[in-house]
Length: 199
Image 1 (cartoon, helix red, strand yellow):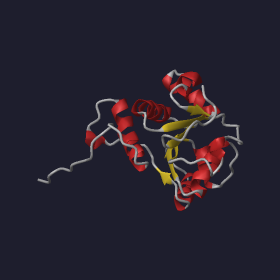
Image 2: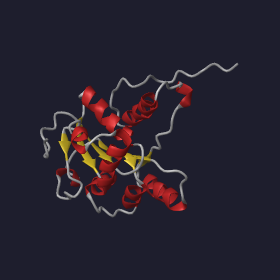
Image 3: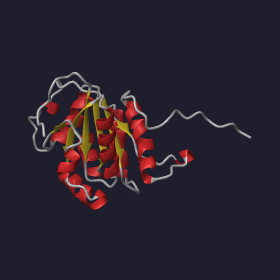
Image 4: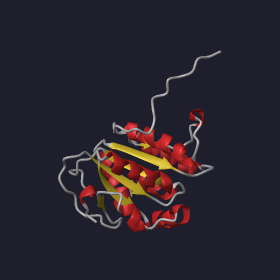
């Protein structure tokens, strides 16, 4: 598996998987990006994210890392993606734990996930967080507000029932279509809503 960036022929996207439930969002995002082939992916998985891969999807770290173009250890603060000179479309954290959200909101930069997110904020690049928690307490809400005020996008992956999804995968993909739209990445995960006629 590659551990350092290659040529910049394709736009780059940083993808982080953390310890919230809903790890399927990050995995399917990587699968779709691999299939589309238009973006160079840089992957980070937290220790809790690895645990969730096993619990929720019966997957191991290596099988998910194989979906990415480059993999960076979470503890490698000196990695290329820790610098603003690393050009990218931005970063997706899917799912985003409340711990990661808090660290990003307060600028702790205590690991490579939160440092890469901080770089996106300071460089005014897209940072899209998919938080998975319910119910939300006041700290969660204030941290989401702080990230939004800094230019990040809080994107709870909520089902679009009006699309009448036929499976969990369809519900997940409906959210991921919107995530890819945030970065202007062309995809085939869904069509634009045409509206309905009122009666």
